Image (cartoon, rainbow, N blue to C red; front, top):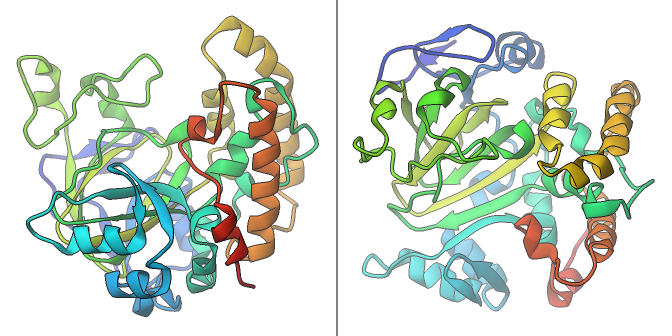
Length: 351
């Protein structure tokens, strides 16, 4: 049964012209219903019962991370620290909480993969998981993009922490945001609001850094933007479709995961967004863009592995490392907003 949630403004519109007055909460949603009512129309939805079968739903607490990974080093927005230090700081109400943000679980804490099974069906099939290995050494590491985007990212931080930008997901991917612990407030805008959000030259990051307290002298059009505002509770999952702007603020200590995905519902739009801006990059990318478009027929028939499989994760990281190595001097994994697992983390992988 659908249950709407509160909105801040009036109805927004999707990229396909359908009105959305509020984001619905659904339970018992079949994949066919999800595809018909949300995936293909690109309408966001909160699914309230998708995470119940996963071990992470009961296990993932700050204490669990501290006890299991306390001496593991992780890179946060406040620098590198151990997981124990991270947890101590996010639990301290007097401390400025660090933000472990957008770090791929298979390459950071691969032991956690088993807690994510069974993976919610709504993110399947994910064409980004296709083995794009035939051309790993293309200029600019193009073949590394899908491999990186397909990885499940971990976000862990304290209360009252903002995601630093109002943004679109890279290359117009769909995204599933899975909230395991704590509450998180979302601020979302339909694709039709883009002209009021002051996007950058690439078109995927807004110049407005605080949607709750915007500078309307600098951004007067934002006063006309229609924003949907809602809270994602523990055990709930948000489907954020292609083209929807969003930012967040944590209300409690928060543990969440995010996975980007693409399939027939958004593949053409994703390939268009992958094109580099410079003419040299566009020339280099053109053969790969054609390859990706032609490959769609094959991916529609491909049998994809379980995204929570450690073997799948290892193969993806090997391919990603080859692509990063192909970038040459002066470029690194940090260029893609990620950091592959340290030898210590890799040694701790479990099946």
